[in-house]
Amino acid sequence: MLTKQKDRSQLSLFFSLESTVNHKHPLFILANKIDWEMFEREFSPLYCPNNGRPAKPIRLMVGLLILKHIRNFSDKSLVEQWSENNYYQYFCGENLFVPAAPCKASELVHFRNRIGESGIELILKESVRINGNDSNDSIASIDTTVQEKNITFPTDSKLHRKIIDKYRKIAEKENLPVRQSYTRTLKRLSLDQRFRNHPRNKWKAGKANRKEKTIADRLVHELERNLAPDSRHQSDLDLFKRILNQKKSDSNKIYSVHESDVQCISKGKEHKKYEFGNKVSII
Image 1 (cartoon, rainbow, N blue to C red):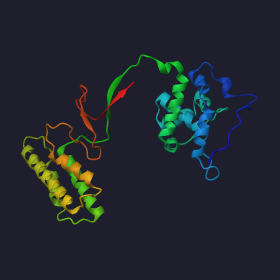
Image 2: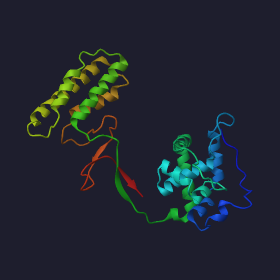
Image 3: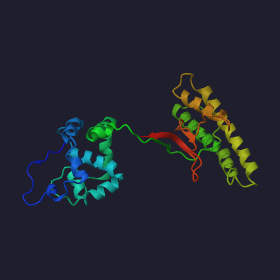
Image 4: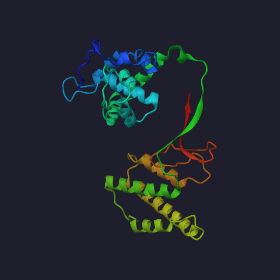
């Protein structure tokens, strides 16, 4: 439910934030350029008009999101510093100094989920409008970097283990018959794979890797026999086959089961030779 709007035309007789802050400060200038009423009109329909606890003011939440990106703060750090900074409070629409946190850090997450991608684009659109002629600058600085994915360092053994785990989940979900679980065998193979880089263990670890791949291949074929040709898991089966058939020197390899579009990128960094993710261009 939306909270009642504050009457911002009546200021305190003795004290107000506007009279204490520097009017040449960038945040003061920016606060008076932004069309806050536009955000009120666009985001008000996202709230229930009568039911529930009154929500935080829309200007407060939008102002916190803008400050988060201007200052590059985390949600928790921003909430803590807001109660200490007059300019942050004036930017978010306060008339008097508030010696308390504006909201919980988790409420920023809920607000982002509420406005969605279209709401974030609306805030970005307003920032472009405020910049005016600066947004039409003919000179741009362009750079590329790697956006790393949330995956572990990929190895063939990890991928084969993921395939086996996926097979078990699919078989349990679809109530498929399982001839052999390989639980004891896989436990023994994991012990053989320890210290694989030691000269004495390389042969034993390599043999365990090959055995693990054989088990994964066997389970995939069994899954293919038990599932219908038009099954909803057909895309997973195709992905499993690609992983099992890929070679060391192949291009467009699969490095993760749950993030199949991950690429191996080398940017020439001395401390990190390879990064696994996607290439990002920043302008």
